[in-house]
Image (cartoon, rainbow, N blue to C red):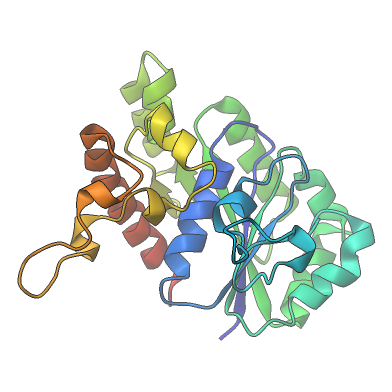
Length: 261
């Protein structure tokens, strides 16, 4: 099968790109070989959550990371890194996940010369690109539309509708969500429905989703018991556990349905 190059991108900041990249990376790694790359020198949340650690529990430096086991750094939007981008496609992993910084889509479009050069380069490497674009407001919608116009041929697009973020920040949240679904619901998409608390976001700065809380359905034993217990996870607040118990399965199932053949 062709390698799938998953690029989480938006020119809008504070839109949930790294959360979306985390969900995709963690879900796919449950069944597939996946290389993970952080592409932002200033914000390395994906590395802090999924990077390999040494025997003392400290993160190994980025230049020592194996992207198939942890998260490495690659400036995919930088023309000077062209050879490194080409080398990254030589992996035996089926998926590569790139978490792009804000305002990087123009550089991405020109890093190989032109947008079509970029698509042709991936095709030559027997890979296909899937852009995943989180949306919640007009700036993120504009960025998504611009990216589609930039790459009109040969790329796939998936929207991540950040409904939980909208609920947490907007007064007329439901009407905004309904409007997004009416406008984009016919396109490939998944919804981040649940509103995550500031406590969860704080825990997710340095921990994976399932280190924070693994859904009970994934922990059910043959005798009907659950192991380990809820109290063994970083999310100690019962409300947070309730939300995570719904959030993770819903987005994981959506990712599996959209990305796995």
